[in-house]
View 1 (cartoon, one colour):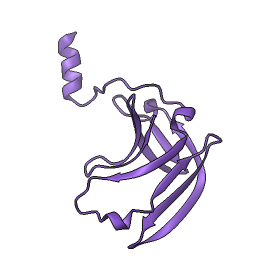
View 2 (cartoon, helix red, strand yellow; view 1 turned 120 degrees about the horizontal axis):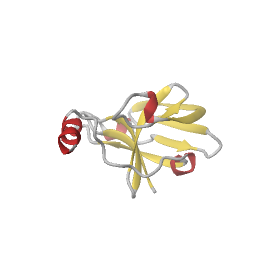
View 3 (cartoon, one colour; view 1 turned 90 degrees about the vertical axis):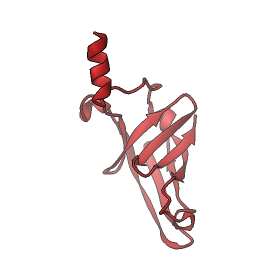
Length: 123
């Protein structure tokens, strides 16, 4: 059994347990985080995301050196089972999906894991 678990983890299907993802846990204001060295802070300094408890969202993207756009719509949680084993649940803003990474201290909506870009809010 241990060999099977180790093999599953080595193949990327193993993830640490996350606290439950509920609409109430996701609702709130998110900050934009970018660890990408090629990204200029002034391109994203006005970014904000608000998920309302009524299932609507307000997304502002842009900055002092990039055109600012605002989008409003509806959001929902899509269970991990929709994506196959080993996947994270997603929050969908209209038709854009972001994997949800949750710890006891914060919730991240992952934009690009390779370059380290996400939305974050404290729990």
